[in-house]
Image (cartoon, rainbow, N blue to C red; front, side):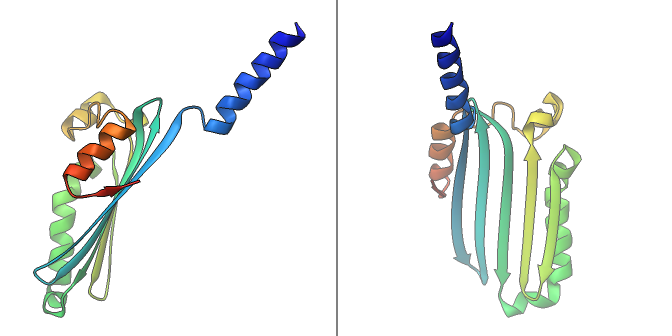
Length: 143
């Protein structure tokens, strides 16, 4: 009985120390073109090889020639990202000076299948390594 308890305790500790199969993927990409310097970051949390949470953050620093149109640009970004908000994502867009920041958070574990389907997020990316490969094909650097 003592051996069984020790084995059970060791098993439980293994899950506690490893986060119960939880892994995080962080990918970034920077671009600079047409007067816009853009930094993008994607973070995804995997539990047992399934994405459960994800956020996408885009920070764009605009050339001075764009500053006068900042509110129009913000409205355009809100319109383009509205589908995420309408389907369970949390959207936050801020502006400061010549910088606009857009962040979308997804709690996929609590989204309906219909919401995921609407956003093409059914079985999103699969495993952490498969997700990293797919995002690296798109120009991201992942770790």
